[in-house]
Amino acid sequence: MITFVWAEDENGLIGSKGNLPWHLPADMQFFKKVTLTGDVVMGRKTLESIPNPPLKNRKNIVLTSKHDLDFKEGVICHSKKEIMEEVKHSKKPLHVIGGVSLFKLFIDDVDMLYRTVIHDSFEGETYMPEIDYSEFELIEEEEGTVDVKNKYPHTFQIFKRK
Ligand SMILES: NC(=O)c1ccc[n+]([C@@H]2O[C@H](COP(=O)([O-])OP(=O)(O)OC[C@H]3O[C@@H](n4cnc5c(N)ncnc54)[C@H](OP(=O)(O)O)[C@@H]3O)[C@@H](O)[C@H]2O)c1
Image (cartoon, rainbow, N blue to C red; front, side, top):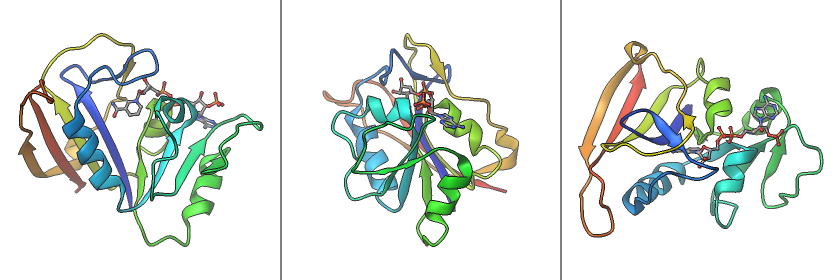
């Protein structure tokens, strides 16, 4: 099974200057809970946005065209074919965690969407590629709690391909 796991603001923004545009620990917790169930695959720029890679207790797969990327803690792949080869014997889900190029690459294969919507508007330049939600059914939705550490109203959603 292939999933997408991401957070976007009300305009579909996901990134700003190589980082997340917001600080929302509750979403980091949600992300961790979901992704610990499987392997994660990400683009090289998303890897660089992670403070202390790898993401622990998960196989970290990185897609890059570079042949000198130093990432011994994970698996480096140079094509979608190599990624699929890497996980072909795995019974766990493959969680695609971005960025844009990775979401685009797996858009026709994804079975489940774990989307966090942050009900605010931020500055940035990286936007989630378009998803045809008519192909998916919303199966779970939960409003996040706003508190001192989590200032922005947010909603956790899970969609399943129809
Ligand atoms: N809000 C969220 O949930 C979320 C999730 C993920 C990322 N982000 C944000 O998004 C930004 C980073 O994402 P991004 O979209 O700019 O970049 P990205 O997709 O993470 O990485 C792009 C890189 O991946 C490699 N790549 C992509 N397709 C490839 C292919 N077919 N073959 C070989 N290599 C390939 C290339 O690496 P090389 O240049 O090394 O060849 C490319 O430069 C950051 O701001 C990050 O914080 C947000």
